[in-house]
Amino acid sequence: MANLVELGLKHRTDKQKHSFAGFGYMTVYQKYFNPIRNDVYNVLELGVLNGSSLRVWRDYFHRAEVWGVDIDPRTKQDYGDRIHVVIGSQTDHWAIDQVAPGLNLDIVIDDGSHVVDHMVESFKLLWPRVASKGFYVIEDLETIYADISASTEKWPGQFYNAETTNYRNDAAKLDALFAPMIKALDQGLGDMLFLHRWHQQVILCKK
Image (cartoon, rainbow, N blue to C red; front, top):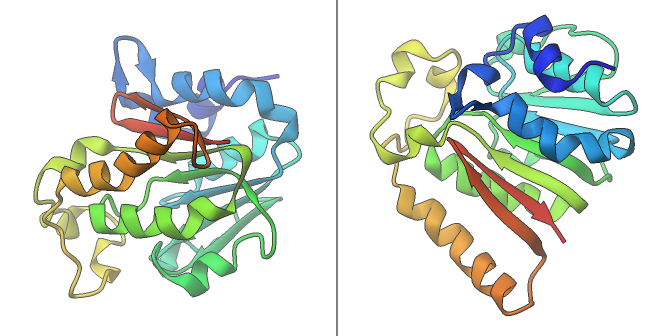
């Protein structure tokens, strides 16, 4: 069976190009996801683009329904069996509710707008739905330290965001989101098993 690096190359996802010290996104994911490969039933990725990553998850997790949420209506296409796309903002309660209705999510990957306010709101919406021993990932964290207003001119779909969108990212907002969860973990409380930080990725596992 192909591993995630091989599938990433096959489907031409850009995730492996984010690499540091020999660890690209797919290399990191292989470490976490391989042990649960046969026990994953619902995967959600925020941000669809051309659907390449959705195809990777579909081929890797052979029992899973794969969901994508994207604000860009052009991403609503047929990407093959077991792949479902919902059009809406990653902070839209209605859109999120259309994903695997009534079911827990084994893996959530935020590769959406890269707007910190959106990252925080999406986490608050989706973390309660992550299954026990499931994972929540936020990618491309190099964007959280600066104003990304220019992304509206070059990143597909950004211009569909609300006019009030705050593109002046502030990493402290993510720190504030995770700080009480880390404190609870140190006290033997809360619902987080661990939080790991890799190059441009944060990976949380549900207790």
